[in-house]
Length: 118
Image (cartoon, rainbow, N blue to C red):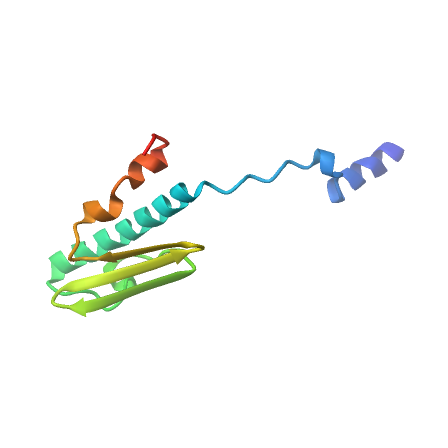
């Protein structure tokens, strides 16, 4: 009986010595690289849509992409076939304009996310 009560207590309210320590957040460079890769994936979908239809989509969803999970995400067609994506997570903000090469956006993000030294 006592063992049963101790077991229930350990499941409902385990003492701190039995609780795992929380996983620390990734380093800031990894967080920003992840955000840049998210923006890259959306940009590629929009560019594919533009290539297929000859126009920019009215929304990101129309291009076949979901909005980025971010604190703030904006897509805007700025005219002349150019669009801008802005995404923010915490202190990290990534802005991409389609008149810039995608390689500038990605930079070393893939290397950072794969765990190699940037």
